[in-house]
Image 1 (cartoon, rainbow, N blue to C red):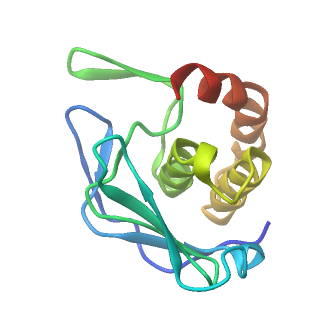
Image 2 (image 1 turned 60 degrees about the vertical axis):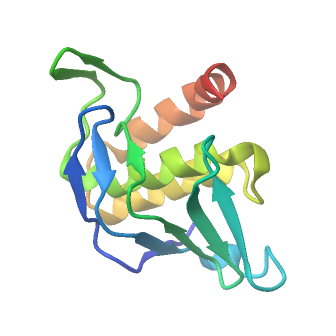
Length: 149
């Protein structure tokens, strides 16, 4: 799947989650152009706050303030995070993948498409272990989504 980044990833370390966006992050997914006929589609969290938007041209934007835990599984023990490493070249991929999975039940994309975008973003970041991380989300991502949704 072809993906183009429209913005740089701007985030800070977060106490509750691992990362929090300090500016909106946008990608363009050409295959998604036309999935919604006109305008845009918003995706809200459990507090009814808009966290992401899909535009008719295939642009997917994630709002500033969105927080994510990096590559899963990850667990915070005290001040330390344990689990899958989230090196800098994977952070945009993990951000987008977490957002896509969070809204998967109400989205015009499939789990397989979310995983393909994860792989494309890791490859574009030059991450050598991209196929390994992709294999993990293809194998375990559905189970994780089913348990934690």
